[in-house]
Amino acid sequence: MANKQLSLHVVTVLVLLLSCFVNYSVSKQIKTYKLTRGKLSVTFTNYGAVMISLLLPDRHGKQDDVVLGFDTVDAYKNDTTYFGAIVGRVANRIGGAKFELNGQLYKTDPNEGHNTLHGGTKGFGDVIWSVENYVPTSHITFIYHSFDGEEGFPGNVTVKVTYMLIGENKLALKMEAKPLNKPTPINLALHTYWNLHGHNSGDILSHKIQLLAKKITPVDEELIPTGEITSIKGTPYDFLEPREIGSRIHELPGGYDINYVIDGIVGKHLRKTAVVSEKVTGRKMELWTNQPGVQFYTSNLLKSVVGKGNAVYKKYAGLCLETQGFPDSVNHKNFPSQIVNPGESYLHVMLFRFTAH
Image 1 (spheres, rainbow, N blue to C red):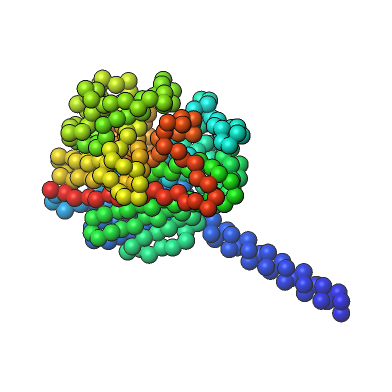
Image 2: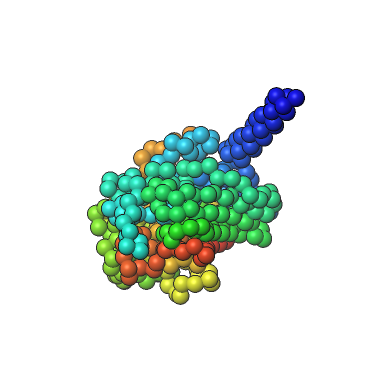
């Protein structure tokens, strides 16, 4: 009788373990999800919480996908461009792949020379997120539990990313994070490449852009900030008035890849950050955020990447506007701090408004 009870107990435990395994497998399954409202349609995957596509009408109502990316989710696993991904735990660069916090030296994964880029070799753009909430006409929330020591960063952190459709023409993104047991730097960013003419239409040099920022954080030859904050007046970085991206790009080595210091007071209120327009289609994209900086990047390193529908993405095929904390803030005390303590919360909001005239 005892043996029979033991056998039943073992079977019960095995069933429970199998159930847990099945649930875990299902929760970690890679899928795609779509949000649609009015004429705005956006597709995502829980691999990297990536934005795969965004369909927008032009002034005549013709729909185009204005986001660079791939046809299959598997292609994102080998992606080195960060197409559409949520990057972190610390977006952008950490000089020397190290920082000091409360007297302790932390060494992060040096995945770009001897520096860390976008969280390391396996940052948040290369992990499988769980889906916490999904309403196809409204929003989707991805969640990820980052473990202590992941890519060298201290502490366990719970991260949530929610994409929301608002009204007929707005897309909002809320990135939240909570450290559970240790202070840690947190700086998340959305790494979408935009081309308002269409993802397969060529370069973005004729797009006009306005950046509401009077200063930048200059960088060295490895794109690590020097610690200075300088004026853009009289330089090719001045986009206070709208002008074509290509109008002065030849004056720069390679193209634009710099953090702008957004005008206004950092806080919970959203500030208008950028306006991008494309004359052929009449499409316009406006961006608001609560972050202190925005990285303007003109896809300088794209080299014949085969994307959706066999489109070939070359240099300047898309533009990135990555709202963020300043790059390498962990090593510059004069930059806004990215350190978040247990009991505190990180909140990063982006709001996109799309029109066509």
